[in-house]
Image (cartoon, rainbow, N blue to C red; front, side, top):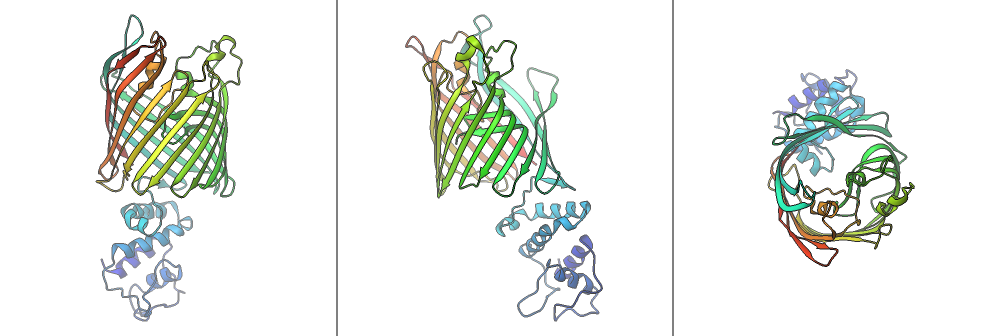
Length: 430
């Protein structure tokens, strides 16, 4: 399309043409039909000419030139109304790759209406998990299959330049075991930014500790404070950890315990280091105090071009015997949703003693669940975990996990072998 046609459309899209704009280009005369559109956009800083002072409006516009125009519109987006912003955002989505090359961060997964941004994802999932024996409640080495689907829709509403509210609805469907499904809200929090280096979050959010996602709580209810930058930052929070209660611990008439944590993370070149402390022993549970957690841990990630090496180590000093958890692994590549064909593969070794972690993991497979099954009598579990992600088309990723050589160490010194577990899922983001 001719450049001059794009300029006329852009002027109509934004604030319209001004009769008082000065002529900035030697090859655009006052008699040209697009004169007002071109000069107005030049005055606004949306378009620029060539070094010789010409506009060359009859030339076809390139995608790169179009991306430059969109980038300048995005910089002035707060000057437009909701309908104009929606159109600009649609254009930004179509030219996301070119904008990224210009250093303009535009997520083509977000939809914006006024001061509300929408995001979401969906998943079709097949996986295996250990089956519980109906007589002894022990987890057997035989696995059962899960066929499930999930969709999550989130909305970020901007209260002002420093404050936003986020909520997310989730629906999960079991295609084998249930004919019905329920929709609930699993995230609801308000976030306030104090300048560039301090923030406060209040409500229900997710908490990721460590470098591998093995120490992860999908629902943390409480208040969280952050100070610092990506180079060196400190986070602290007070509230309740949901996944600890999901382990089936008996707290009598009380809820899962009030807890607090601190997390320090620093980055120097390719090296990222972290240290965490989590205290779950704020409440008095009498005889149940042995079930509480007081964790400390360290983690590291080293990225060399496409290769990364990572690991976590945690210990629970409140549980009898100070059980420990550790994992170490290696990954190659990066699966970027906007780049079909990009991929990431990884593998890690995991060993966890009973009581060494609070039940959360970002992985689809969790062989560590055998530690808390009734009558298992295990003191630890160890296994290898392999993962792979491949972007098969824009915003569609095929994800797979495989846990193998799963072994449980009994308190009497014996070892129990468990079946390998595998999962595969198609993940969509929008």
